[in-house]
Image (tube, rainbow, N blue to C red):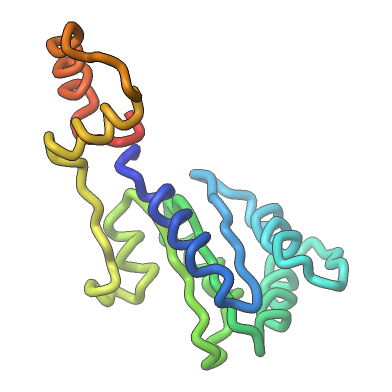
Length: 166
């Protein structure tokens, strides 16, 4: 956590999203309520028909049908469990429209599962090195004379351990 997965995915989402018929960025909790999650996706898609059901499969079917002939772009952020991905992925039709789904997770096995164990599609992020940590830190602090605070800034950077969020 804190290495910048969501930030990177969000940047890609905003830069590429305009090339698609529809786009959705949705974050997942550790133990998601699938009805609520799929309902949020339906709401973000601005689907024309209101879907009233108490079945996960009905919501999946509605989303699949809506996306069937569309070029879509999804970011599914912070997946914690392979079984959650197993349900969500059923909502994405393979429609030969050049659609894309990006997932983020901190769990390597979940990352591999989200790309059908094709390891070349997993991008593993690492903490920043000392030089880039320092550069990011000073860019956030601004145009302040940090010379008298040199020692404490080194301590702060050490505690952050290369994690941008920290």
